[in-house]
Amino acid sequence: MAAAKKPQVPAPVLVSTQLWLAKSEPETYSFERLVREGRSSWDGVRNYQARNCIRAARPGDLWLFYHSGKSPALVGVAEVTSAARPEPGAETFSVVDVVPRFALRRPLPLAEIKADSRLAELALVRHSRLSVMPVTPEQLTALEELAGQPLRVKQGRRKPGG
Image (cartoon, rainbow, N blue to C red; front, side, top):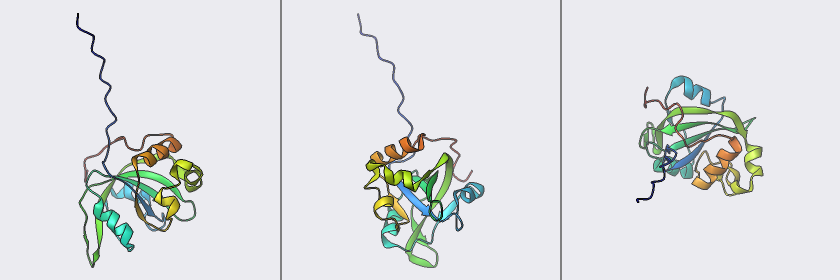
């Protein structure tokens, strides 16, 4: 008699293989504006380390959207939709296109992020001036637990440009 096969449980659908956190002051460019516009080129980054992160980003990568300024918090999730290209008028620097995927149910404040020892090595905590930074899968898991929701699962996915 053959052994019964265990049912296959599908793995979560990952948005990306690379994970990034990008900061913007909401007065300059907010997640809400990205949602309204539906797409944006992430430009104006003038730090070479952040520029290198942009150059490493690939279509499909997860882009955690963080508001800096008066109420610093992780607020949304976007997706990279283009390879890096030179920024027009500032070819030393690079841009990628991003589209919004979903807003967090509640903003995840910087104070909560800093209070979690699992995130002590997160570049946001260690190098707070960096505007685009990598996030490890383990750090993403900790952020998901703090946010109380999955951040890597496609939610309300739209076609790029749609």
